[in-house]
Amino acid sequence: MKAIGVEPGEGRPRILEVPRPTPGAGEVLVRTHRVGVDGTDHEVIAGNHGSPPPGEEHLILGHEAVGVVEDPNGSGFSRGEFVVPTVRRPPPGGENEYFERGEADMAPPEATLERGIDGAHGFMSEYFTSPAECLLSVPPETAPWGFLVEPISISEKALELAAASRSSFGWDPETALVLGNGSLGLVTVAMLVERFEVYCLGRSDRPDPTIDVLERLGATYVDSRETPVPEVPSAHEPADLVYEATGYAKHAFESIDALAPNGVAALLGVPEPWSFEIDGGRLHKALVMENKAIVGSVNSGPAHFRAAIERLGGFPEWFPEAFVTTVAPFDSFEAAFERTDGTIKTAVAFDEP
Ligand code: NDP
Ligand code: ZN
Image 1: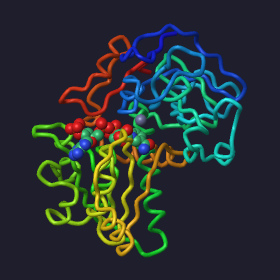
Image 2 (image 1 turned 120 degrees about the vertical axis):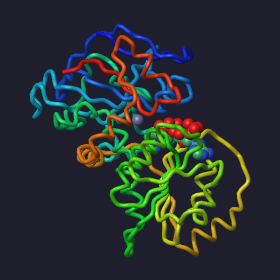
Image 3 (image 1 turned 135 degrees about the horizontal axis):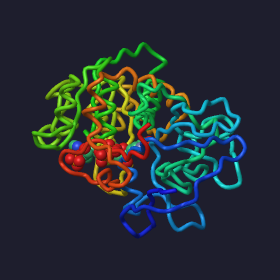
Image 4 (image 1 turned 30 degrees about the vertical axis):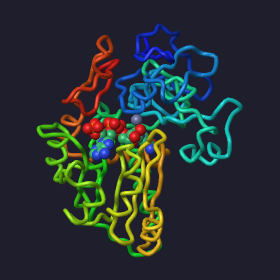
């Protein structure tokens, strides 16, 4: 079968011919429908993150997938059912305490593999296998956008962790500031507008499709070149919740100034090392005296996937159409890896059921 993979050092994905997988005990064979591409894939392709499985030269890409059950292999799934796989798998040597507790998303990097990213092949192939317990059923109506479940689940987890840190008192947040108008920031704006007055920070000139989408969602665009993060409270209003999805390391600290008292910032970005000066004393004091919190969050668990499936079904109908700017057929997959001015979210389509 055909797959899309990358060899370290090549710097670009290419088509590979690999054997079609055979499901082992407890595994389901899935025919791949669509696979999303995100910033992590670009990092993997650039060689900055992740690695092929031990002893192999290439890594099959793709961690945001939706497919159709081809062979349920004795699991509770039915042939023809749409499913979405989770990303983390136990490292060689088997399960550890995190997997045993069903909390793989809380495992430190050395205690987990990530399919399509680090040490395990991903889902960008005509078929893939997965343990049945790592698959979640999606309704046929939302299946064309099922590859958005994984990125939405990332935010479901981050928002859960943020709210958990505010659960000991009557937290009634009204205002959210999303840092970053990339695909993760924008899908999070779509999640937050139901409940919050949302501001979304970027550094793009109009006209820009991400600004169009966030304004259509009812959010307010903030240009960081005119209004840096610490100035958002005076230019607009303080945020009860900050959601950082820029990977711009200064934002982790500037968020403290953007928060209202008792607010919380969730950090999602994965920056490169960068040394810079901050007034640590002032920021430390602000965190303490105003009961502010900062939480980091990575990956997501089955409960977040379930919440994401529900969330996807509740988005306005126009949103996925506007948000997903490219669905490239397999034989012209390169288009899904191009980043042009009009690109927001892209995917590769293997099979259109
Ligand atoms: P993108 O690179 O697509 O988005 C980042 C966005 O932030 C871009 O639109 C960029 O604008 C904007 N940005 C960066 N710096 C600034 C700035 N100083 N002021 C205003 N805007 C800025 O990445 P994704 O949306 O895919 O992901 C966001 C981050 O989250 C990344 O760091 C990614 O690695 C991380 N991530 C983390 C996950 C987790 O589990 N924690 C999961 C997935 C992703 P421009 O394009 O104009 O430069
Ligand atoms: Zn992703």
